Image (cartoon, one colour):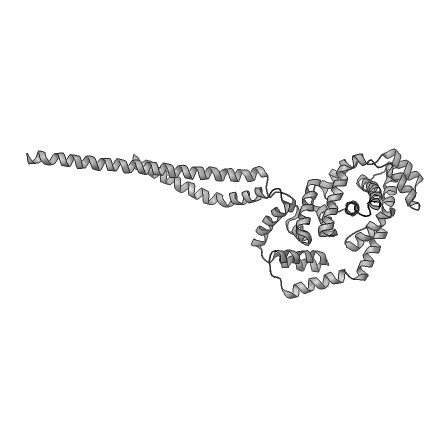
Length: 374
């Protein structure tokens, strides 16, 4: 009977050990992720390790793709990521990236982009955003957008309330930018970036839905309609003053926070990184996490967002699921230790039983000896 119990205990210990070996990698990864859950940059590093370990050529492949599409900024971001992670790239590939970046930074290219941004309000890079921000700083761009959307609102037509709210907020922030001698610049740039991304149709569905709720009360409709009716893009200063009266600053806190975080991304990692963030982030919390990644990773940010997508802004799995792996590992460890305890007890009991049996047998032999002699 003792042998059967001992065999069962040994089998239980073997099973527990096998389960522990299977569970341990998942539990270890879950523990690492949970420990870094409040640091988006650390989480991004953890995921990048996994992605790049399974495909070492991923960075060079993405650099080639970025160069082929004419996106030198993205190619440079991948080079920065490779450098930070000590991943070797060929000299020829690095030279081609440097040449492409130099060409896009040329005076002629910048002048063309600036003019495009100033006239059309469309920003794709630093040059065009500079033109767009310049137009908004001189209130022309924001007045143009408010007048257009305000007329739609007055006539009962479909109105882009997000663009309307962003432009109205921009007019208010522009005044603060001048007063603070530029200290509100990142916020001003963030408002322009969000507005331009919305107009270009590149804002994520989640942010569009959130913005629709958040901007509905930012502008006082009747006051705005009166301002638009009397205003004109040819009298921007007067029109801007009238429009600012329709802006409800107390209702725009959430919108301003998002614009500020977008501005932080642009300031730390570049305009296109901010645009990429607005394409993948689904809510203000994710934009705030992107800002923390940008401030920690700088020029690597676009490459990180390209490789990980929205996953760069989220936990790999829900915290509850990760905790289950850790709980399972603890249960397995408890089972393994219990099996060791049971095995030791059964082995000790078996050894004591055999020892007792041997002593009894020796005693019987010793007693039987004198009896046989008599």
